[in-house]
Image (cartoon, rainbow, N blue to C red; front, side):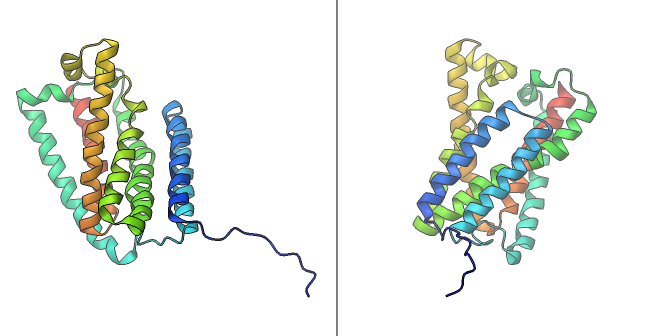
Amino acid sequence: MSDTPRIWWPGPIGTWPAVGLTVAVLVAANLVLHRSPGLFGLVTAVVVSILLLGVLRWAGGTWADAGLARGTLARGARWALALLGLVALVYLAGALLPVTRTLFEDRRYAGMDGGEVMLRVFVLVPVGTVLVEELAFRGVLYGLVRRARGAVWATAVSSLLFGLWHVLPSLHLATAKPALTTVFGDSALGGVLAVAAAVVFTVAAGVLFCELRRRSGSLLAPMGLHWAVNAFGYLAGFLLY
């Protein structure tokens, strides 16, 4: 018998323990990202993304489970480019029509300059938002649950948690956007209703993102749509404020 000590390493974990661990990581990440925007938030997003991929691998998952199989990347990129063009047309039409132009008004743009908007569009949104959220919800969570229960369950679990992820970022939404203040008012109850509406909306968006992931077979498709909606929203809101 060899006297060389062996390094102990835990074996693979089950799907549901992996889901639970993923949710725990996301709860902690949500709190950190909400309180620490900027560079620290970017570092946190990258670290969380790596941790979640590690959880998926620990549970026996593959790049395909995360929607990042090499053979699907080209197809996913084509989907992403098509969705970018579609969102750009929708935002352009919405910004030009007087009846919808007010929807882009957001008091959070007050005081922003062009450099800060570009930083958000090309750094904070793709890394701090799209990367971590898509890897978490349409990548790791979706891949884990689909392997155990199928696409319907994967879509339901991923989308519900995606909606809850947006509770903290939506706390001041009713007062930040004049269009929503008109609907919900600026009372405490109005704020609660605005948060509930944001959660419902993001659950529905999560279902759409999951369907894009399923149909394209690639995480790049929902990533493209997610970036376009957020980035073009910043640009339109800044230019129209």
